[in-house]
Length: 113
Length: 113
Image (tube, rainbow over all chains, first blue to last red):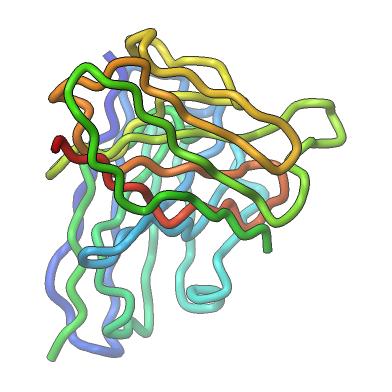
């Protein structure tokens, strides 16, 4: 069974940092692009970032460019999202995705003082 | 960025009756490789989204055949032939032709009358 298991969410103060992790099993992790998508409280889905299969190329939404960094460790089948300079508007459930066909369970990030 | 516009945003339906959701893109979603990268996702209450349809009309594994996708260019439709109680949730279209960013529609909430 294909699974993406996320960890690392929580409560952080504005200006703080947090790192999300997403462990993959049951799939050839290194063959596919990975994405992060977020969903604010009561809101729709918003694409955040993407990393290509070998990790050489990344993309970011304008709203997180320069603050968030996506990375992957293909040897550990794990995807990461390093989030710095967090703002209240970053509060959301963050999902990791394997090529849009498989989604993680989501992890809540709350930015508040 | 490509803007995805769904209608209606709320869709009350009677069990056993058909339902249809429209999705329009601000530019053609035909890729230079000839494919059209238009996906449909379902998000049941309290759950992660899951993909139903990829490349306009291809059902993902395990998706009931009462779900179908159609369309071309800038106009796309998701149809449910006979709505069942388990179909309640929010449905999103998403384009993957012109990236970054990958962009979602606002979502259509399907509820039972």
